[in-house]
Image 1 (cartoon, rainbow, N blue to C red):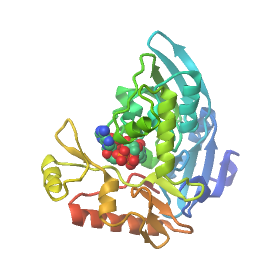
Image 2: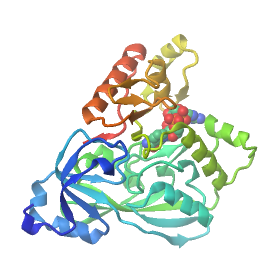
Image 3: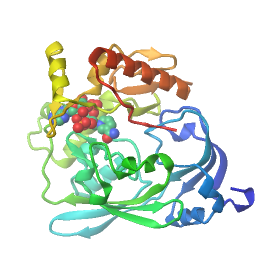
Image 4: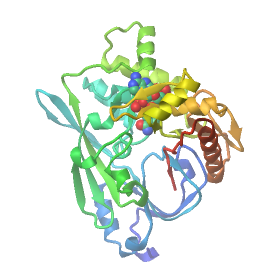
Length: 348
Ligand code: NAP
């Protein structure tokens, strides 16, 4: 982009550290905070954009900066939440992609619309939520998403997607399958959610069930479930404002049934969750802890003492230190258990 042709909302040489929760150093050559789809259309009319690397961020809560970015970072700040339909079955809300996910959860509950309570306190924006099909305590985005609106950032053309078009999987969607979350080709502007009137509490996860029992709630309301989830998460997860982090750093791995059996023979206490396809889901935190990494540092980064799955920046760390620690943890888990961990955040 030449200086002459820059729309006035595009800034140059912008510090990204403060715009990400892991607080690693890194600058963007160009940075645009987008509050409307009209701004996206303006960007798409800029010819220099066609040859420029692009990247989309929301709250920067799932991002590892490995250095400077020589292209355009588009921060989605499109707001608004609206009840667009109310019928015998459900409430349908349409939400701007830049809204904070947790605030949305709390707002729907305050309106008396249940359905998102298990997903309370998940960091990030509404627009980021479908990309990795966020989930917690037995509920995931795919259970509630009706449709979404996205835009092709090169052409500025709207690309609506229905539920099937999102091709959801475990922490997966068409955005990841196509690599759109890496190349900034598609930007989600709005998400529509369907919140069921015939609501049923989902409390089968042991940790949530135990918290509800401790609170003596045999038939909890959606708000009470959200409060329990919030309490659990606050106990286990560090606040990025005081200890920078990007939430869970590795995916919970799925392994073959035969490997799970072999591991269980050697480690009878290994938590195992059999899947319908015959694979078995393991808890990454357990594997990391048993590999000696819980509460252990390497340089200025470490695996958090209260939840081994969270990688924390103890202060002043660089992306290279995060990569070194992630590799060390992966190597030890692989050597000890024969399980390969894959990082959850995006590396930029
Ligand atoms: P956790 O509750 O200790 O669970 C660890 C692993 O065990 C997860 O893979 C979880 O599956 C599985 N698990 C536990 N109870 C289960 C049950 N009753 N049935 C089936 N699977 C069960 O994990 P945590 O790290 O403290 O996280 C709490 C919740 O937040 C988990 O649901 C986790 O997936 C979720 N979380 C989501 C994201 C994200 O969306 N990116 C990031 C961090 C944590 P599931 O993963 O299928 O739940």
